[in-house]
Image 1 (cartoon, rainbow, N blue to C red):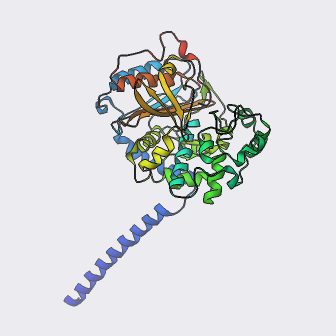
Image 2: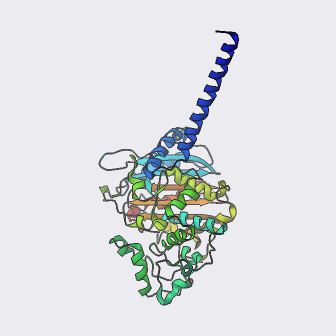
Image 3: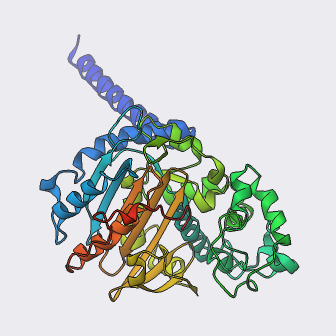
Amino acid sequence: MTKIARRRRKTTLAWLAVACVAVLAAALAAAALWPRSPVANLIAAERVFTKASRDLPTRPDDWRGRIDYLRLDARLRELMTDPSMQGLAAAVVEDGKLTFVQGYGVTSAQDGRPVDAETMFRWASLSKTVSGTLSAQLAEAGVFALSDTLGAFNTSLRLAGGGERLLTIEQLLSQRTGLPRHAFDDRLEAGEAPTDIRQFLGSVRPVCPPATCHTYQNVAYDTISEVIGAATGEPYADVVEAKLFRPLGMRTATIGLQGLTASDNWARPHHRGQLLPISEAYYRVPAAAGVNSTIIDLATWMQAQMGLRPDVLPPSVLETAQRPRVATASPYGRIALARELKDAGYGLGFRSFTYKGHRLVSHSGGVSGYRATMVFDPAARTGIVMLWNSDSGLPFRVQGEFLDLAYQLPFTDWVGLETREAQIAAPVSN
């Protein structure tokens, strides 16, 4: 072979190598962009998450900050000895940084698989923070105005006297329909279609004129999924995925039953140690109670709500979503902690209140066999999220002990484990 031929051969091989690399890169890019089924996306997400989870603060050596995480961990372990508990995942963000992740108990009384950072749970009514935030985001983008009335979107909701024609999106999301609390949730649980139930709500006598008082809803609240669908031309779940979950990197967050059960690591619902059949009822109101995820993605959601992702959720959107529009009773009923929560209000799917002088943003939720909660201080960028697979109300009380640790306050036994008074379950939706 001549010197010129050898040189040409080397040049050809070099170009072939470059071409192969380019083809491979294009294939990988196409694979990342090519639409996949929700199940395929979930499986791929779990693979990515498994790799990332190795760096999570799951060991005591990783728990660094002002908060006494050893004390918090010990308290949660003590909590798990109560017969009302089954499994629980908890995560803490301190000064904007994920500083504590831990799983306790098991995903199922049958197989005894430990709960860990990758276990999937239901958010229940904490899902309302997603629809409220999405609505604020769409309003800022000019897709609709929060002052638009529901009558402009031809939704299935009917209110006495044609009140739906006057009720605004803002009033719907701040739970000011005027309907009795939890109106027709029993019909939803009995299997009736949400659109049919919303038609029947027009025959319900209101407890106050629309827009004048706060009454918590699920079926009526989910009307926002119809509004978003009509305004965008896309299904509600797809808009959430495109506008929030994907941009925020919430790789395990899904909407709907399949998104939960497709995982090989999902927590089964329980009541006092007994396995429950999974209820699909509240998945049929996705804007009110349809989200699932791991504790890590719930922590990611909390960080975004703290203002740490202005590229997706700028301060103006967060202020619109979180700002209270109506005064409410203190959350968590008559427990001792509830008496310390002052100035309670409701925004667009968000609760807010003050605890010993600190303004907090929060929401909780519960469906049969599952509970969820998030509370954070937006100024300190510090908060806790918890997901658990039982009807127990105990972890709601842990939030008080966490806040005392975060604010360096003296210990108060908010949980009440010593007296066992706290075994009473919290309301199903709060």
